[in-house]
Image (cartoon, rainbow, N blue to C red; front, side):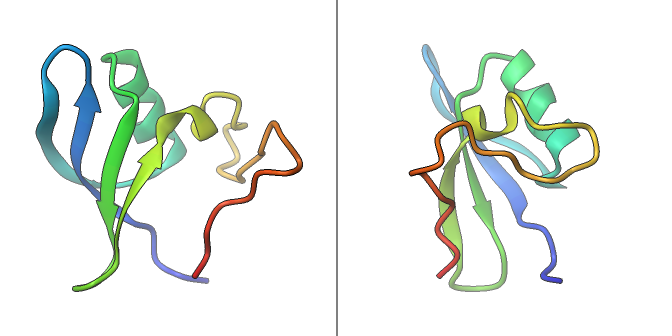
Length: 79
């Protein structure tokens, strides 16, 4: 199992990109950010692996921490 990504910045309107406390991007942390009005998070894993991820994917996620995608055609990029 790979280690979780670390959230570094989050985006909301108005305000744009804002630094957030560096924290593992778990379902609970993502829900907390969505509750604050953020929609996208910039998260990294390692030196050169930084991604911008939509927090909408965590909206319907169960508390167990497993990811569920609403649309079967959309899959997270794992490359």
